Length: 141
Image (cartoon, rainbow, N blue to C red; front, side, top):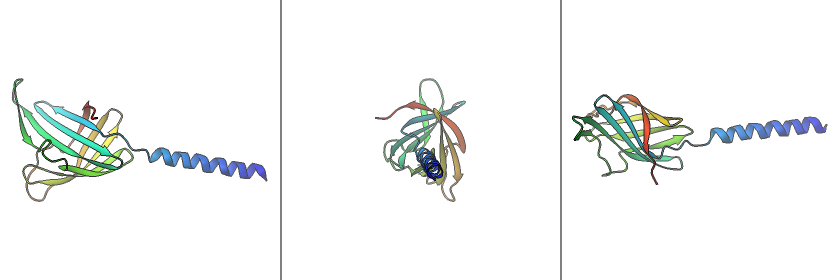
């Protein structure tokens, strides 16, 4: 009688630990950069619990001496990007300097994140990439 009860308790404990492990949130805090040729995409993300917000900047590098920002409003508004984190994935809404809006999925994988637009704008434009893997440029705080 004691063995089945102990076995049941052990199974329940193991299941509860695996559930807690799946609920752990990935750390999205930081500045993340994607570079492809002369194009850069920078995400500045701040996380508080399950809430994530920040801004982005899409850039064309015209020479080694200067860069021209083509989309995004850095630091002028923290809620250019806002959303909720579930585990290692964030679903966010974003706004463009050009009047566009959209939804994106950001997946955390090791020391990189993957940006993927899941719904584009019906009005206005945006110039951030459709998808890309970003590496961490620097930590925040």
